[in-house]
Image (cartoon, rainbow, N blue to C red; front, top):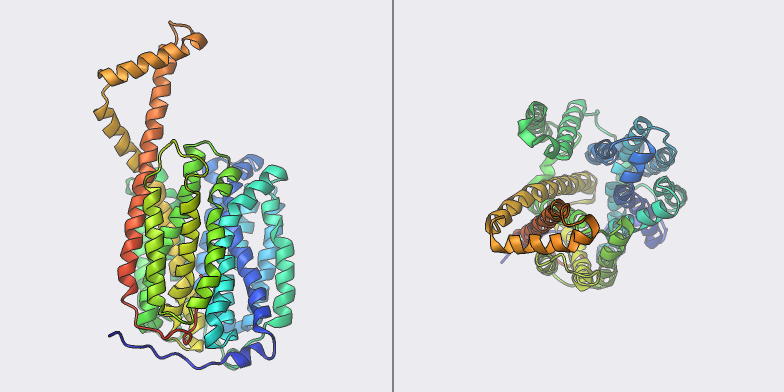
Amino acid sequence: MAASATAPLDQSAQVTQGVNPWLIAAAVMLATFMEVLDTSIAAVALPYIGGSLSATTDEATWVLTSYLVANAIVLPASHWCSLKFGRKNFLMSCVLIFTISSFACGAAPTLAFMLIARIVQGAGGGALQPLSQAILLESFPPKKRGAAMAVFAFGVVVAPVLGPTLGGWLTDTYSWRYAFYINIPIGILALYMINRFVHDPSYIKDRKAPFFDRYGFAALVIWTGALQIILDKGQEVDWFAATWVRWASLALVVSFLYFVWHSWSHKDTLVDLKVLKDRNFAIGATLIFLFGIAIYSTVVVLPLFYQELLGYTAFTAGLVVAPRGIGAICGMPIIGYLSNRADPRYLLTFGFFTFGLTTLYFGSITLDISPTTLLLPILITGFGLSFVFVPINTAAYGTLSNEQIGNASGLFNLMRNVGGSIGISLASTLLVRRADVHQNFITNSVPQTGQNFQNSLAATTHALTGWFGHANAAHPAEAMLYRELQRQALSWAYVDIFRWLSLLSFGCIVVVWLFKKVKPGRGPAGAH
């Protein structure tokens, strides 16, 4: 029988200081929703940003990568900054920086100005999730944390789904600049509510921040920056075929190993890796890394399938995948009720199994599907996700004290972001590589001298004769057949990715049962 974990004592009263904890939940949820929304909303507007700022598509992608790099660097440093400046002050500063830089992004006259503004925005947004998570964890008594985190997770789950749809509508209706301007009213409201309702606990006020770990921070900047650049640009230069990728990989490995050694063997480091000695948190960090690969890949790949192969606009593709958010909405009240009554390992098993089954169903897609074919599977996917986000944090944080949560939250969210970055990069690479493999397979299976190909060529040539004339129809016919060959090969590449992601989800079920048992309603729960 698995050993039961010991949960920390309830210290929520000193955090709320007479304020209704649901008002605190609303305040921190606004800040997190704004940050998560912005992560996905800008992706839809990239072609418009590039055209407006006279940038190529490759250059426009730096609008995303510059944000992610700054975001990842600040995540682990959020706990130290909370101790140094006070958690409430630091959170308000981050929201203010994020809001002002959002205006700067929307008003950017050049690409260089946009990239600088995005870096500042990423730095401001990086700490919003772990800070909000830590505040919410401490604001509710243990028995109510499941329901509270279900509400908080609702915003985190819905925001990535709403982002592409809202971003597409704003871009098509007004301008891509409004995809950034929309953060301004949300940021102002979040600032007011945080200032009004959020308070620092006594251990934050009484504890002094240690000396700033400049060596650990430098190593963190190097390895996260190198990782993000390699992931974003590696496919374009055929990975290790490029000399700079090999050097960047060397810098990544050396700086990462130094960061791990330094953070483990020294005291008062920027990130205290000794929290990984806690078995549940170590398993949780591993699981959120693997799940980050699965969920981010799915969120990115499915809309691309609709846009690249079926010709949907960004707005329409966003609408098609929007039922995932509806499924999450349906699941959150249920998980909020069950999280205080059921073993989180059973809930996680159900969530990963559901996600794996629906992803496996995505692996049966063809080019003949209608907009409603995947409606029910996408809806069920969102429902299954709600059974992952809350229980995974319940189990991971369930044996940590409140004083450990701030450091652990930054590390936990970093693992999710790194997993997501790797997942997106792997999915993009596999789409290209597997499409080539399937194209060669189809070409070998249907040779040009074969009867099937000749019949298709003759039929297509005949169909195009009225447009180009009998003498000139052959070349357009061959081009049309080759384009169809590419579409079929790419569709099989999507099938491969969905099936592999399904296997990854099923594999996560095995990892789930490495958790020690956490008594329902006792340990902290996290959102994202």
